[in-house]
Amino acid sequence: MTELDWHAERSDLEGLAQLDRMPESENIDAVAVRTYRQSRVREKMAEFGVDVLILSDPVNIRYATGTRNMQVFSMRNAPSRYLLMTQNRSILFEFTGCLHLGEGFETVDEVRPASTASFVAAGPEIADRESKWAAEMAATIRELTGEKNATVGLERLNAGTAIALKDAGLRIVDAQQSIEMARAIKSPEEMKCVIASLRATEIGVAKLREAIRPGMSEAELWSVLHKSIIEQNGDYVETRLLSAGERTNPWFQETSGSLIGENELIALDTDVVGCHGYYADFSRTFHSGPGAPSDEQSDLYKIAYEQVHYNMSILHPGLTFRDYADKAWNIPEKYYANRYYLSAHGCGMTGEYPYLYHHGDFPDAGYDGVIEPGMTLCVESYIGEEGGKEGVKLEQQVLITETGIEILSQFPFEAELLR
Image (cartoon, rainbow, N blue to C red; front, top):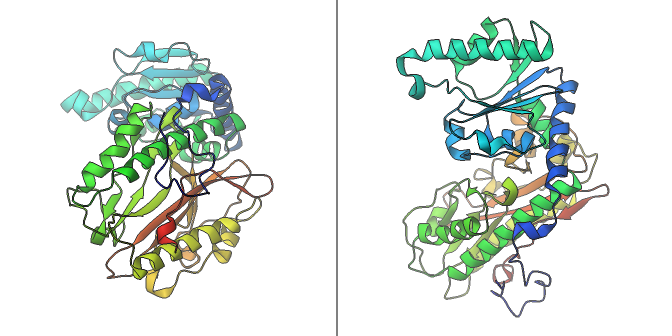
């Protein structure tokens, strides 16, 4: 049994002592999760006038059906497996030799072999392959819908297949609006998947924190998290965002072989696609020791902590994205240039809609919408002075409820950096 005992004397860890439990013990009704998600997709298809969706993003296929297969491979080899979905039918076109993986799902009416319309699969015959792919797909769509000019939502297909489908007389639109708006609202049963992924990731981060030693490399430390996630039946870590010392400023320096020095900050963004395919996304910054953090390190940490907690405090259902930007915490001028690119973002099976922008970025990048119950959001902060030595990355994952928020990330903050 794994114990989260990195600060045994602390009083704020109650309830976190035993988190080492397999997802199967969470009593999740997987059928209810899958059918809810598929109904959400069909609801949004109807709302936005989409007759058919062709999904090739493996995350979206998993959302709509619960099926998974070689997720990272499928992301870069589209279309190698894809889903055709109407209001009444769901046909999974599965990768060669893998048709058995789609069997037994109430969300899949039929499994057919996929035809990979990519250059690596077809070589110089790619145009012919794309044309045949589109002709077969158009015929299936007309058979299912009874319409010659059905509106088809597409995503992440090579250009030739999209052009060929349009030339076949279909009305092509982007699938992203339907699928992203569907994914934005989680059911109570779906939230159990989110929680299971977070608890497993917290175990991994606890192991990572315990492993911190000056002289080890960033990559060696980062691998502790990845190992724990895989051991707990999670999928993968989507990014490589662990850095130490001067490599914490600016942010977004990928994990390297650089050695961790004494008394340095170590910043981590989990970005874990974990149990049940759900994203566990929180950020923490640690201190490598053996001495105490400097005043400068503590100040950076306290400012980031203030930003995250202030912005969580203003979240509530019915708040518009524009009003959130206007009310959000003002970043001090000396940290503004290095600000995190978002103030908050949606989170489900990956990072998703909506993006909530800082006040200063809203005129150019922002869009309006409404924060709704059932959304899960990640509230972000990066504090590091432009040209400064180090920076602090913090992030907290929350659920929007009928009355406010529920904090989902339970991994504690660093008391020694909040002194």
